Length: 163
Image 1 (cartoon, rainbow, N blue to C red):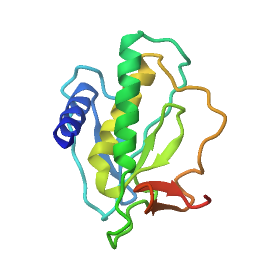
Image 2 (spheres, one colour; image 1 turned 180 degrees about the horizontal axis):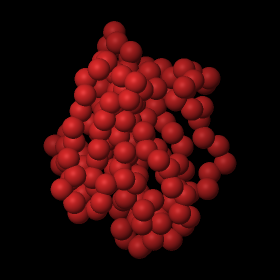
Image 3 (cartoon, one colour; image 1 turned 135 degrees about the vertical axis):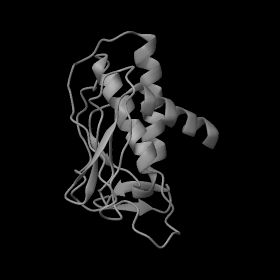
């Protein structure tokens, strides 16, 4: 499973140009590179936390059938993996500095130590929305990443603290 995730992460990062730059001590991932381009990843270590963000586009439903379905599944898997955390580790993991987007376009806090997987999730989200596959019209999103989130020990997942 772990090897498959790395292969997916690598192919997603190569398939969509990912640009990382420093912004106020946080890395910002923008999936606006051209598809099929060489796209590279560069980084700046100005603090021990990273921010992963993306500009959201709402292109509505549609797209190209199988591609939308497979990208949607890949996106869901990457978001789930990026949010995975371990409450037994004595470290802040769900600070809101690393963000991914689900199929509703909701910003979700990911584990700060999974920033490479989060960057892949953002790249797949950009590709999925770029094809017109989503985001879906959902009723509610969880609180934004600026509100407190924590590593839930029962689900091993970053969750908003309001629950």
